[in-house]
Structures are given as structure tokens and as C-alpha cells.
Image 1 (cartoon, rainbow, N blue to C red):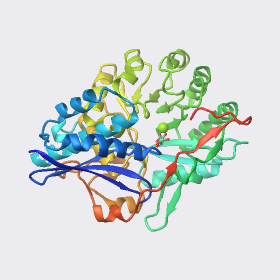
Image 2 (cartoon, helix red, strand yellow):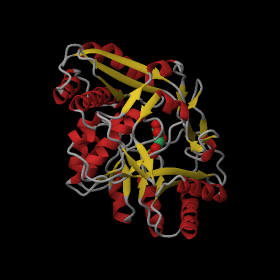
Image 3 (cartoon, rainbow, N blue to C red):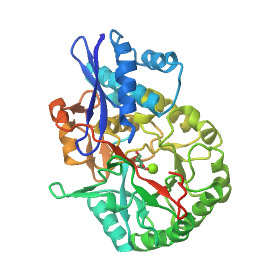
Length: 412
Ligand code: KDG
Ligand code: MG
């Protein structure tokens, strides 16, 4: 079964997505997500100009060999662009193999280890009232675990707070459709770590008081603290029993988490911007984290992320795969098949895509009573409507960034 075509499809229904579609000589097609938020076209070029021509004629069943060929023959290893491109090829080939086998992909990964995947959604509010409303709204949608992000007094706009969210009247869904705002330049936000560190514990105290001790609560620090500030934050949130505290320091410095561990038992999650097992070497071996945040889309696909998660499993570290709206439905389905099959699944992030995205990508995965399931269609269970995708050309969009009061550019 030889590959005869590898097409890169860019579409922007509610936001930009890059999808690789591989076709074999017997007409089977497979999809892979290659969306790199804010840098989408770099991956498009990598795939179109350098990878697609190499795929023609390859045996589509040789997934591991194709992975190793793309990773090693390039000479230039790792990095988000390379690993997103390899991920798209890998996932598309798994999709094809599972379709040919007539099975949902999770069956080829070892079969189901559970009946469904616990998902968490994003609640947020500038004020306490808005935050409480948002938590209730998520509970009404079925979410059994909730990420809490809050405004900070004195700061005008903060990433991940509801001003970015859009309410879709036709579906009744609120979704964060463009944290990467469309436009020629990134939006500028403000930041003050000391105010944030003072304010956040008061918010979690109020949330626990209102919603009780059972509800799993998560929080994302978006890489903004120094190691000692991160340690202080983890310690101050300990009484509120978080499910996890995410990205408390910039990800490059793995050793930073040693200091945090010395001061707190708050569980830690990191890795949404990591792309290989090497990025996890210290923090897995030294047990400095509790959850691996990598997405299939950004970590070399199912083949590589499965290896990372098997390594993590030896240290009782679980998965917490990245699942914002910039992971396409193809990438989300891949995460669900992998999450259903592995033993050390922890939780899956799930923000809901907008209705135009759902028309472009027809999906068989389900979200019921707070649990995700990839469905039982052969393959990934996602198909791309190419005509529908063609209605929405690429639009330049960037994630916002932040500056301190004196104008200094701060960590993401
Ligand atoms: O593309 C980056 C965003 O998706 C990211 O900022 C979202 O931090 C995020 C999360 O945890 O979903
Ligand atoms: Mg995050």
C-alpha cells in the first residue's frame, strides 16, 4: 500500500488549522493535525516543500520506519515546526492503518484501558461573580473537572480570561475561539507577578467555599514565575487541594522545578510547548512533575508521545494532554485514542470548537457527562470536508504577549 499523495490543507473556520491528508494507491486516506498556533505557515512549508515529496511511494504501513526516516534524515532534529510536521505524518499513517484494519485506532494501540476520558474545561472570570457563573456553566455542560483562571486587581487584561471567549447563540456554547487574535501584530497585555501571587489564593479559597472540596480544580500559570515565586505559589495553593498547577515556570529550565518540589505537595503539570522525550529527561527521571502536558500534535505524533508516556509511567507520572482549540479535531481525536489505550491516563483538556470548525471536521468522538470517548469508527473517526474547508482561507493571527508596568517584555 503505497502513498500517492500528501496534501496540506489550511483552513480558518473559527481559527487557523493545518491538516495533512495522505492518500494511498488503493484510495485509503488518513489525516494528521499540524497546527502550530501563530506559526502555522512555517509547518505548511516544512510539510509541502520538504516532507510531502519524500512520502510519495513509501509503504503506508511502515509507520515507525517513516518516523525514524523523517526525524534522522533531516539532520536538524527536534523543535516545534519539525515535530508538528512529523506528528501529522505519523497520525495520518495510524489513521490509515486503523481504517485498513477496520478498527478504531485505540484497538491497535492495545485496546481500551477505561470506558471514557475525564475531561477538564476552562472556567474564567474577571470578577468573582463572573468566575462563579463560568464554573456553573461548565458544570451544566457536564464538566467534572475545571480549570480556574481569574482577573487580578489592577491588571487590565490577562490571558485566558473570558473577555477572549465567544458565546455562540446557536449552540449555547461558550468557547475560546481565538486566544490567538486575528490581526497583523500580537495584542499586548499587562502583568504583575506580585499582585497575582497575592490575589490567587483568595480566589481559590472562595471557589472551594462555594463549590466544596470534591470538585477537581486546575490552574495554569502560563510560564510566568521565577523558581522561587513558583515555589511560593505552589505552597500558598496547597490548602485548596488542586488537581494540578500548570506551567509555573518557563519550560526550558527543567531544574527550576526542584525548588518547587522542596516546598510544596501541589501536583505539577508541564510540557505543552515540549516536543520530544529529551525535554522531559530531568523532570521525569527526578519525578519533578505529576502530569505530562504534551499534545500528540506537537510531540511527533502518537508514536513518539506514546514513548514519552510509557517512560513517565515508570515513575507514576500520568498524562494530561494539551487540548485547547488550537489542537484541531484531528489532533483531539488522536489524543483520545491514545488516552483510552494507555494505562497512565490522567485527564484530558477539552475546550469546545466553534460550530464552523465542527462543520469542516466531521467527528465521531463524544463528550457525555464530562467524559470523552473517541468513538468506534475505523481509524481516527474524523473526516475533513475539503470543500467546506476551502470556504475559510488562512487569516494571520497571533497569541497575545505581556509587558510589565515599566515596559519590559515578560515571560510568555
Ligand atoms: O497555543 C497556545 C495555547 O493553546 C495555550 O496558551 C493554551 O495554555 C494553554 C492551555 O493550557 O490550554
Ligand atoms: Mg497551558
